[in-house]
Length: 536
Image (cartoon, rainbow, N blue to C red; front, side, top):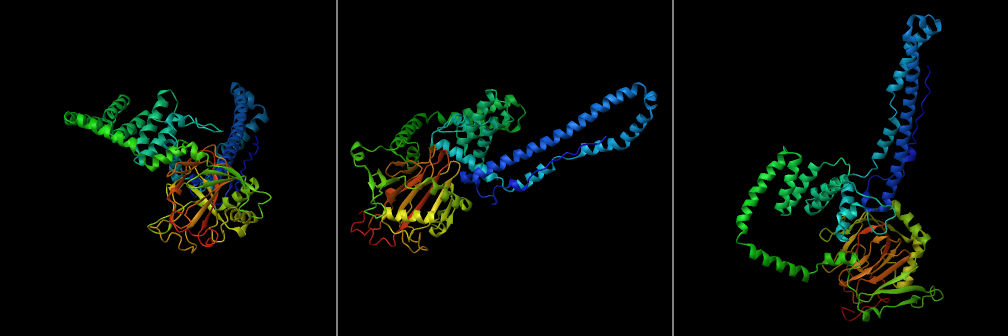
């Protein structure tokens, strides 16, 4: 018997959609899209492997069926069967040659191509840092937008195109990541969600015993001894011999007995302290809470009197020759500090050009460390950025000229155009764009003075989240593709305007692309003359 050859090929070279090594995938949706293509190619490779295995098994199956019939006939009358010389010859041939070929086919490893492909691709895979970063992003979104675990787990988010859900195992993994960060609050939330989904009958590899073990400890760390004991009892019902749970149970009972004695005389005092704490919580609104409220659209609302001072207009850049016949649309977003938005100020074609120029250079965004004076990555800025010079592309040069014409400020001393793409839950927590008095050397190496103003392009719409908020004044500016916002960071006197402290809210759903231009003091002496008062 002759076996047909099985051809199994994988185009390894075609499965490399990008050439850069691992670089914080979770900080940029733009770079994560390449991983989608990588995974798709791996699926194609896997299906080719399955086809090869199926073809191999089909040949073995046909051989077995054929020999089954032949041997059935031969064993009924061995001498009569072998009395035919052709049958005798074919028996010798089968046992000497064809069974050996079958053995080779059975031993043939059809996975070589797939494994080789995986080996090449693995160097471009996300790592533990990416998985942890993406998990923390989900926890950050949960806190910022007041989402309960069930809402996140079921994927019920506003503006989603491709609904997805978390399995009990996924919830367990989120809880474990929170646990390794000593974040027992989120550990409790996600372990409870995992347990809930298992109790509802979800089939999963997640083990209730492990979940209860993490959950009881997380609850205990947060001071709820009674609940910790209840969870430990449930664990012991599932695994009575669980050594750690038995030890914890004895310890919890001991602590509970001690606390009952100590709490007899302190109940009234604790009630009074709780009331005072509640009053403080209502009176005191820290920046973090204001920031999150603004991200949710729950910020301070302007009075009708202030709103009447906000206008929209056609703006010609103070009689700039380029805009006299074709003024641009401008509207006021806020009064103090004055924030204006320019509409239809950058075309879709320009946006795509800027993104294509920036994407190969995107790297983890950095912040200025006031202690070392160096740029460093930070957990409160989750994005990737790239810098584009005017001489690289006519489009970038044209954009720079447009900013100069409409602001009246000299862009020759400005920083290059910065393009940023935000990652999973991408954000930039409250910060100032200008250098404060305690940072005298913030922009010393540039030699162009402080950042006098900020121009920010929105290069994509965002389905949910992603607002630019100003916690000091309660302003929220929402992304709208093709628009740009502008504000001054410094008063005409050169003093910093602390009301411009702002933040980029986490992106809940969607992909956020922005580009910004930081304009500096040098060259503006006659374009924006200094005032006599510090606050003018």
